[in-house]
Image (cartoon, rainbow, N blue to C red; front, top):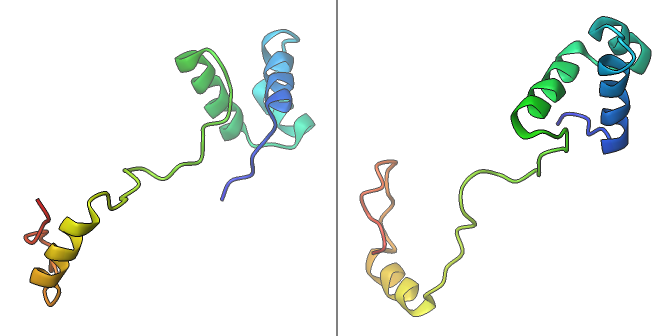
Length: 92
């Protein structure tokens, strides 16, 4: 998993580049981070206006079972089957 940098550190690096005129390669050496990381922060700032770290959430929904009685009935009926990767048996 990539190393997470603090918001203050991100701002400090970008300030050195944007306001102080430091080159990306020089900032990379001075702050001991990769140029790719600096490029990603600059892209995020251009897209969102900020360099705040993104929340670390997996994609998709939380897959919580809401209707337990409906789930039990489904499991009783289809408990011996698997989807086989095609998703054919789905609770409706």
